[in-house]
Length: 147
Image 1 (cartoon, helix red, strand yellow):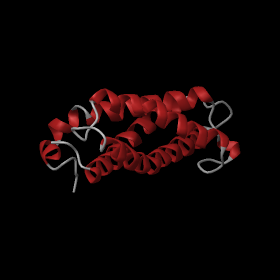
Image 2 (image 1 turned 180 degrees about the vertical axis):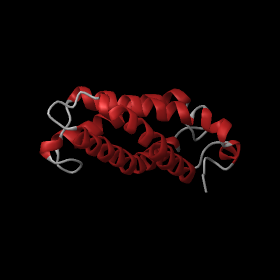
Image 3 (image 1 turned 135 degrees about the vertical axis):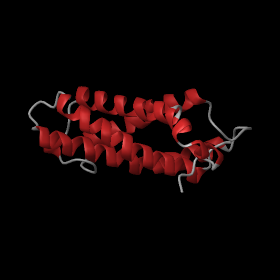
Image 4 (image 1 turned 90 degrees about the vertical axis):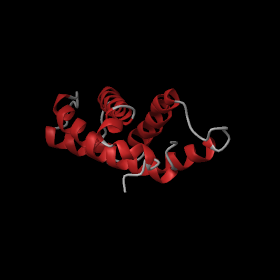
């Protein structure tokens, strides 16, 4: 079954909230944060993760609109993976060039951001396209809705 808009939003929020939090907990102390302490590093990664979740709801609305032009109203799996590029670039611009997400004194370097965003996204994408279907078999039949 094709996930519904509501199901995709719920899946994104739940999986990024849980899996993203686990990735951040393990990865943050290993990131090259330069002058930032580990506590500040956690603040950065968790703030960026929260921003990715919130902005992701907007992305889902945009993707839903674009999917209406496709005959099956869904993306191929590869499209879901490739969205790492546009979502990552937008998030980098929000983090690096504005104070909407982080104050100037907590901005991570490009390498730290790239590692964090890429690994979190790949784990998220892999989980949604694999283990979630085994762990929550009814998820697929409920249009991706968790509730």
